Length: 264
Image (cartoon, rainbow, N blue to C red; front, side, top):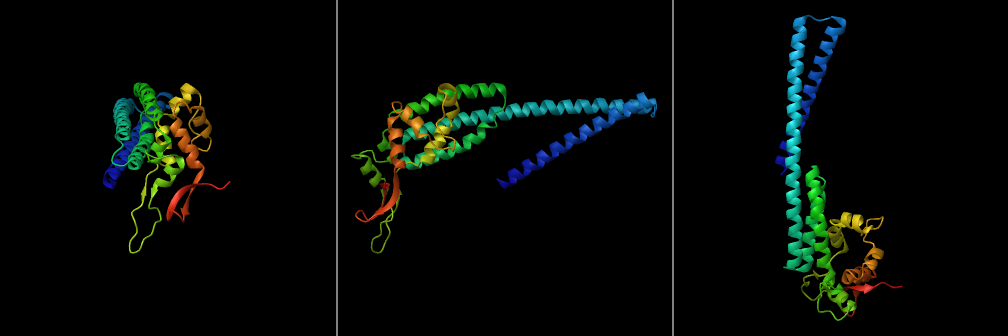
């Protein structure tokens, strides 16, 4: 990977240097022609040489511009295709819910973070229009996925009796110590940061169509916005509100760390 990055850097430096040299040559040729026409400093032979260099340089610069434009279009199309593929991967792995829900969400969030960088590399006008169409479909797809998910789903404990039970059971063996060995820690609940990464993919469309963002000025999920949309995805709102009301503490009775309500 480092080798590929190095080669790309060398190519980029050479491309910029070559273009700059041609521009210098172009300017010098114009200057020579100016001196001949205005000052009469050079002979007609010099004028012919300068004009030839000027035409050749102009042709080369135009060819570079055309090639650069084509390469930018090809790159934009490539990143658009990869962006769409990545968004479909996220949707598929979230729906699969395997092998573990939390692991699935961690993977989906990582892919989403990469997609934010890909999006900035989609520059062609036609590609941006198609991206806009895709994002509108994707917004409805993600919101539809979240609409029927309960708070227990996000805690990773589908059979919980209530939120207290889910919060207690979502951190299995966290800090539990027994004689001779330490049990394997198994955290089940989904981090708020992972939910943020997924919602960030569709936030621009939400902002345009609904007039609000999922995020507050500090970049955190807005509890007020989630509450307004409580009927659309009640489970997500209940989970975020409940999770924020808790902290990880060691419970002597359980013998391990659990998510417990914060003292008021």
